[in-house]
Image (cartoon, rainbow, N blue to C red; front, side, top):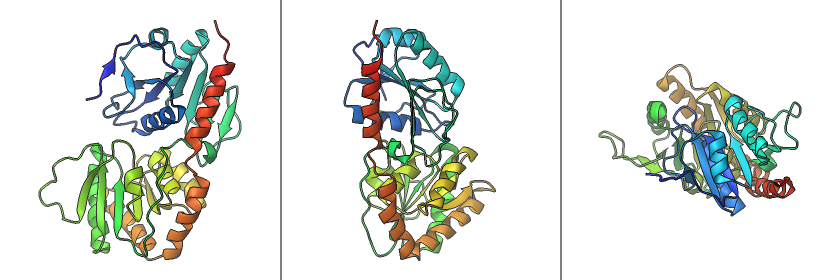
Length: 328
């Protein structure tokens, strides 16, 4: 169980305010972890939602924005929330206290009047940013440092990472259909914690834990089946061919953006029932397995487009913002 720290935790350089939970996902929290590592300074996190289990960051107790900022007194506030109203309340509270604010965004969503806005999306609007300064593009994609995938001549291992909870049935259906089409393939299915293997689970399906992101597993597989969030960026950076399926409509622009670069194969939106989607996904995995040239494009071009240094670049920009902020 993650330990929540008392609200009084002064001496903190960065306070992250992120959204995380079953309906929101854990991508925002994973970004905070990657960015905190790149900063190499004291950091705490305040979470909107119930998604803090397993994080290595110190979580401050739930409280209003002003109360938290007064207690923590950070040098900089970093907001990563897809809801502009929630994020804006923290920006306003920080501005009143003359604390600089860095905001992280996906696809230009939830823009707020921060000191610095970061949008490392594959597609991002160039206009309409209320921030004092904006950094956009894949150079600023905040992910954990990737491990390059092992190159093999054939597809032997496939990773399925579509989330837990209501998406568990989809993951099972996808794993079954991939094995039916590719009988020599081992399938790994990720989850936050490894649970006992269910009765009747095929021997070629292995459940693996990925509490700190997919990097360790991406280095071991030949194809990954992911959604359109942080996991897709991680897979592209590792040079792993992917089939991307949007588990929510908001993920479609990211998937289409990478598909235009020939760095993922889109399976569209996960609608129509688990077995219908599974057949669509598995057909695309089979296509990748039969095309060594398609796999080589991703392995060569993916790490060039998403080089894994975005967190370091963003960390440097955050430090600069903290130094430029007025004091007193």
